[in-house]
Image 1 (cartoon, rainbow, N blue to C red):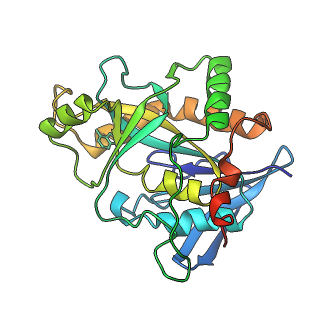
Image 2: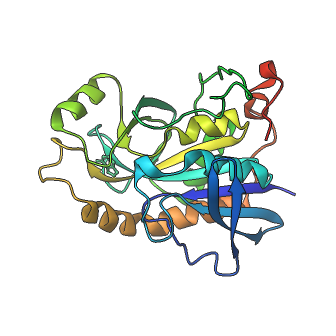
Image 3: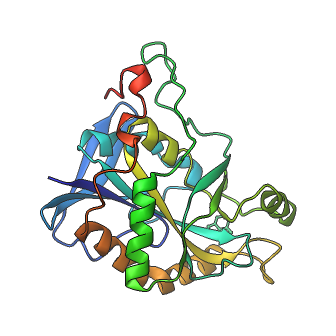
Length: 264
Ligand code: HPA
């Protein structure tokens, strides 16, 4: 049975599309994780709301390790994550979707590994392709088929938050090669890689970033823009559930082979 998960970010918190799913919690070594689980098209689908169903967990307080551990424990193999982002790239505008291809990590306070104790040992995971290339190609195919405007690549800059960025920070990120900026894709993406999951991030552009936008930023602007993009995000999630990606094309499932594989 195909086992996949959707991690819903801002605006994709409680999709009505899973009314028949069961709400459950699971205890992990890092704390509890809440999720919904059910079956679609013969696949096990787990839905996990990153900020909680009432958007009550701030980006720097998300229990990323508990969430990814939970997905692994539930047997998940493929993860589609959504993230709301601002754009630093004038060619990528509000309403567009971006299949992220690389990442710049500017987080400061988050534990970004499962390997931080003598018992688990020391691991250095390869991150040359931070997002699963097989799922990236699959998303590109699905979005093209659905006629949804998107960028097939883009560098995600992850900030600590919860504040928005200063204009000088945005200028610096743009000079460093960033395309979009958000607060939640790290350490989620690297933990998924350590857990040997196939993980892809679809960013939804809600605003131009600070200093590029002609107006100050606000969370309500982000939420309003997300609600305009929710319909196409929902269609992408449906398509991702309906159509399995090709079996070959990545080595995510053996990311820790050098260290004897990921152990729960
Ligand atoms: N910055 C950081 N996070 C965001 C933004 C932004 O401009 N828009 C949506 N999430």
